[in-house]
Length: 110
Image (cartoon, rainbow, N blue to C red):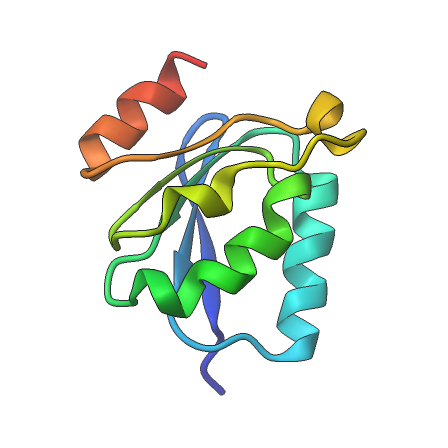
Protein backbone atom coordinates (compact mmCIF):
# COMPACT_ATOMS: atom_id res chain seq x y z
CA UNK A 1 0.00 0.00 0.00
CA UNK A 2 1.32 3.44 -0.92
CA UNK A 3 1.10 6.15 1.71
CA UNK A 4 0.34 9.81 1.06
CA UNK A 5 3.37 11.08 2.96
CA UNK A 6 6.70 9.96 4.36
CA UNK A 7 8.67 11.23 7.36
CA UNK A 8 12.46 10.93 7.31
CA UNK A 9 15.19 12.58 9.38
CA UNK A 10 17.22 15.28 7.61
CA UNK A 11 19.55 16.15 10.49
CA UNK A 12 19.28 16.57 14.23
CA UNK A 13 16.01 18.35 15.04
CA UNK A 14 14.70 18.44 11.45
CA UNK A 15 12.39 15.93 9.77
CA UNK A 16 11.34 15.90 6.11
CA UNK A 17 7.66 15.35 5.42
CA UNK A 18 7.28 14.49 1.77
CA UNK A 19 3.85 14.60 0.17
CA UNK A 20 3.37 11.66 -2.18
CA UNK A 21 -0.37 11.52 -2.90
CA UNK A 22 -3.92 12.09 -1.66
CA UNK A 23 -4.47 11.61 2.08
CA UNK A 24 -6.76 8.95 3.50
CA UNK A 25 -8.73 9.71 6.69
CA UNK A 26 -6.36 7.47 8.66
CA UNK A 27 -3.31 9.29 7.30
CA UNK A 28 -4.81 12.67 8.18
CA UNK A 29 -5.28 11.47 11.76
CA UNK A 30 -1.73 10.06 11.86
CA UNK A 31 -0.24 13.31 10.55
CA UNK A 32 -2.29 15.40 13.00
CA UNK A 33 -1.03 13.23 15.87
CA UNK A 34 2.54 13.67 14.64
CA UNK A 35 2.11 17.46 14.50
CA UNK A 36 0.74 17.54 18.05
CA UNK A 37 3.54 15.37 19.41
CA UNK A 38 6.54 16.61 17.41
CA UNK A 39 8.50 19.52 18.87
CA UNK A 40 11.27 19.80 16.28
CA UNK A 41 11.40 21.48 12.89
CA UNK A 42 9.80 20.23 9.70
CA UNK A 43 10.91 20.48 6.07
CA UNK A 44 7.75 20.01 3.99
CA UNK A 45 8.63 18.72 0.54
CA UNK A 46 5.85 19.14 -2.04
CA UNK A 47 8.03 18.11 -4.98
CA UNK A 48 5.93 16.19 -7.50
CA UNK A 49 2.62 17.61 -6.31
CA UNK A 50 0.79 20.84 -7.00
CA UNK A 51 0.08 23.68 -4.64
CA UNK A 52 -3.63 23.36 -5.38
CA UNK A 53 -3.53 19.68 -4.48
CA UNK A 54 -1.96 20.46 -1.07
CA UNK A 55 -3.67 23.77 -0.26
CA UNK A 56 -6.62 22.44 1.72
CA UNK A 57 -4.49 20.13 3.85
CA UNK A 58 -1.92 22.83 4.58
CA UNK A 59 -4.68 25.28 5.53
CA UNK A 60 -6.31 22.71 7.84
CA UNK A 61 -3.05 21.63 9.48
CA UNK A 62 -1.55 25.13 9.74
CA UNK A 63 -2.61 25.89 13.35
CA UNK A 64 -0.96 22.70 14.66
CA UNK A 65 2.16 22.57 12.47
CA UNK A 66 5.55 22.71 14.14
CA UNK A 67 8.06 25.28 12.88
CA UNK A 68 8.10 24.41 9.19
CA UNK A 69 9.57 25.38 5.83
CA UNK A 70 7.64 24.42 2.70
CA UNK A 71 9.15 24.04 -0.77
CA UNK A 72 8.71 22.02 -3.95
CA UNK A 73 5.43 23.36 -5.36
CA UNK A 74 4.04 26.86 -5.69
CA UNK A 75 1.40 27.54 -3.07
CA UNK A 76 -0.96 30.42 -2.37
CA UNK A 77 0.80 32.10 0.56
CA UNK A 78 -2.52 33.12 2.08
CA UNK A 79 -3.03 29.51 3.25
CA UNK A 80 -0.16 30.03 5.70
CA UNK A 81 -1.91 32.92 7.43
CA UNK A 82 -3.78 32.31 10.65
CA UNK A 83 -7.01 34.04 11.56
CA UNK A 84 -6.88 36.26 14.64
CA UNK A 85 -7.67 33.76 17.36
CA UNK A 86 -6.07 31.98 20.24
CA UNK A 87 -4.27 29.80 17.68
CA UNK A 88 -2.13 32.70 16.56
CA UNK A 89 -0.60 32.94 20.05
CA UNK A 90 0.44 29.28 20.12
CA UNK A 91 1.18 28.59 16.47
CA UNK A 92 4.69 28.11 15.16
CA UNK A 93 6.14 29.93 12.19
CA UNK A 94 5.57 28.30 8.79
CA UNK A 95 7.15 29.76 5.65
CA UNK A 96 7.36 29.01 1.95
CA UNK A 97 10.67 28.91 0.05
CA UNK A 98 11.57 28.54 -3.61
CA UNK A 99 14.31 25.97 -2.96
CA UNK A 100 15.19 23.24 -0.49
CA UNK A 101 18.48 24.98 0.28
CA UNK A 102 16.71 28.20 1.31
CA UNK A 103 14.22 26.24 3.40
CA UNK A 104 16.93 24.30 5.24
CA UNK A 105 19.00 27.43 5.87
CA UNK A 106 15.98 29.13 7.44
CA UNK A 107 15.10 26.07 9.55
CA UNK A 108 18.65 25.78 10.86
CA UNK A 109 18.48 29.39 12.06
CA UNK A 110 15.21 28.99 13.93
